[in-house]
Length: 205
Length: 195
Image 1: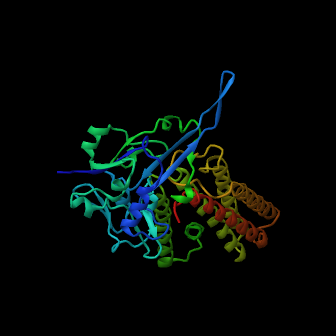
Image 2 (image 1 turned 90 degrees about the vertical axis):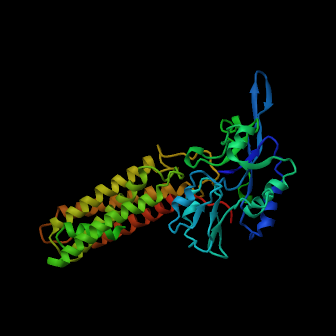
Image 3 (image 1 turned 45 degrees about the horizontal axis):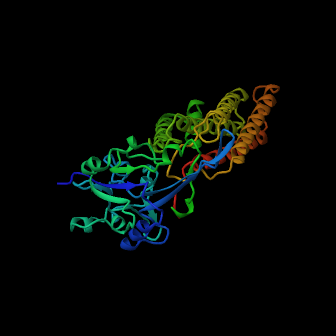
């Protein structure tokens, strides 16, 4: 039995095509501007001198991120009306009927997973495509990835399969929320901070 | 928040009626202090590092106390109260305003000399332009000069005379403008992604 569903993301394989983002949007019929999964383009660096030679030191990779269905979901802990709750299998839900639209959970979530929909005055977020998962299928984002850079499953199983890494630049400190996330880092990510990398597509996420 | 401190100062200054009226004012002022504390705690989320630091409650209290003391001085001055009693509030507002300006110069997150600098984050960078911080400091300094001028104007007068209300009112308006800018900068530290 699954005790904590989780996502795996392979940053080394992601091409930044955003098929996951669009599949999520399409399946959940999200309003324009509301994204439950986003692809961040991380870029930085330039040129550096090695001896007498200038060599490129460019950092460029993508990070696909949705709700991480954290083991310590700070969004739920901060919700004043307890509209955010966690199912037995670890999936975190927003009860939009109870949500009062105060947006405090938006402040609390360091992964910016909660998204405000002005048309309904409520927040919403990734629900792990629970209906598909309950029926034995994959979430839409996982199914749509042409590079197979996304996977899902029980957190313990994913850790056995892919390792323990759950943080890569520019993700926040994972000890804040214990995200149910496993990452295979891109080779550039270790040098991203020292090369002043930054998200290059804020207007898209 | 400034109204809370105003109530506190009026109670302290013995200008809050007598009997049950005074009791209600004291209770309201104490609840107001709890209100400021709880408001600052609301922002101190561990997942929002720019807000989760001592600067947040300190700035909330110093904003309230400096404006509250100045408002109390202004009200007492207009009421032709004794000069010495009004001067206490002006002196307090001078001290609190100076402390607030020094705190924001040194430790304002994102802007101050020793303040927090943003690290890796999935939130877009702060949007407020840096010149607003300098404008805010300039307004605070101008207010401190005006409060100082009010103190100086009062020093040459005898008991029972008033300190010019225009000086105090100007200082209050300038200080309030600076604090509004400070709030704007504070809230601008957390930007929401998306539309």
